[in-house]
Image (tube, rainbow, N blue to C red; front, top):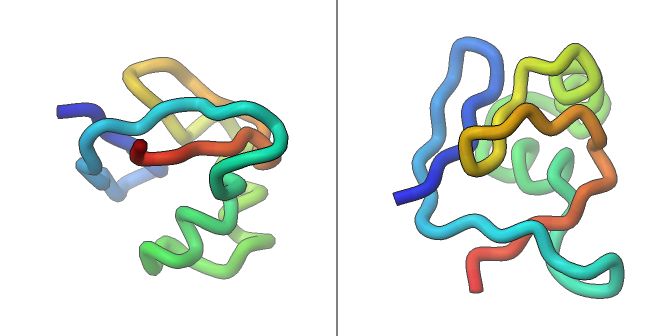
Length: 68
C-alpha cells in the first residue's frame, strides 16, 4: 500500500505511480480533489517539501500521478 502524506494529513491510496507527462493527474489537483485544500494551497504545501509520494519527498506540484 503506497501513500501520499501532505503536511499533517496522510492519505493512503494504493498504488500511486509517477506517470508520463502526458497522462495522469497533476499532484496539486489530486490533493485538492482529496480535500487537502485549494490547488494553490496544495502548491504551497508541495513546494515546502511537506508531501511524500511513495515515501519520497515530492516538491514539484506539476508531477503527474496515477493509480493505474
